[in-house]
Image 1 (cartoon, rainbow over the protein chains, first blue to last red):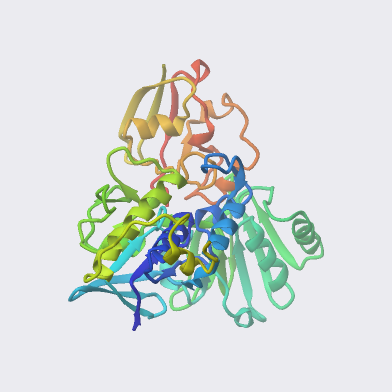
Image 2 (spheres, each protein chain N blue to C red):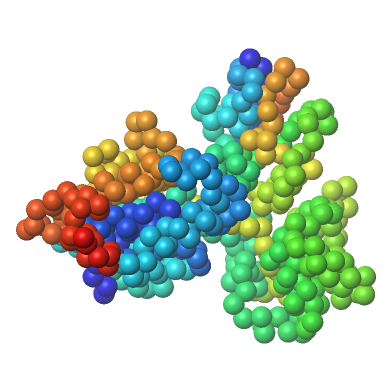
Length: 339
Length: 106
């Protein structure tokens, strides 16, 4: 059981700055995120797109913003738990007991949800029948490529993941690559490589086709695809891989007894607390009258939620407001010399 | 104002007046039409404002922007007449546009 003053769910800009605010006022915290990297939507959705409305930063990309926030957190050595989704939040006396998808357990008086639009999950095949084979013969990511050796693998998708795996697996497997249109969105060199392998018969390429059916009882046996012009093809396959990018889902958050409004969590505007004492929501995932989905709003919300955490984490102490420009205590925490 | 008709997957029709200059996505969101999520807020970074444009309308719309098809690859059940509604700007030119909403966005 990991004990901490506050647990932050989400390592996007709001979660990162909230961590900064907690550390500044002398609380410790840890951050959990389902992605494999820090930065949230800024990194996953628009790393190269410029942002123009961060106060005092005329222009920066999602990646630059993330790098700067990480730099700002450097004095604090914050523990990140990446590739982990928070699955359960349960009341345990005065604390919240939090469990992640990797079975890590936390005990904390404060949980701050900075989850954006939810956790990123791979988009799956829309065909219902696919569920029964999921993680057996249908995969959305690859952990062990050895299982495909000597087998027939049918890959769906037109981005880098689909193309990279088609090229890689074609070395030791029979590969079918299926995409809904002629153009691919992968790196040019990989696209060229795929066409080359298709020409030499190493990859069977089917474009303008989409999945329309699967066959098999205990194991996946066949796949049926349909062309734009309705022509149908069926062939044998041992495995199917789908690479359709990531979607954002509220996921387990919906089960924690919080008041939800569409896909957002209702909070007050003093502490950014939800209807559950000690659970806060900040950034895009929270809602209140006048809410703006701006990064700068997330920063404000995190700063106030952090102060609210103090009361529950240090019930016998009084929080005293201090400026970073003048406070010796804060400068010590930051590891900078005071005048 | 331009009339746009959104038809939900269950067949329920919503015809609303949308201010010119907004996008077809914004028209749906502002009128509380269910079935458009628009998670990224219109920056063409997700595919949750996905619509099917009624066939005779598809060719009348401005060409897709660069990158739109890449996002549509990641939509739920894309078809030949798929568009991201955040990339269709409302103007007199599209008076009467009809879009069908997919079964779901995510």
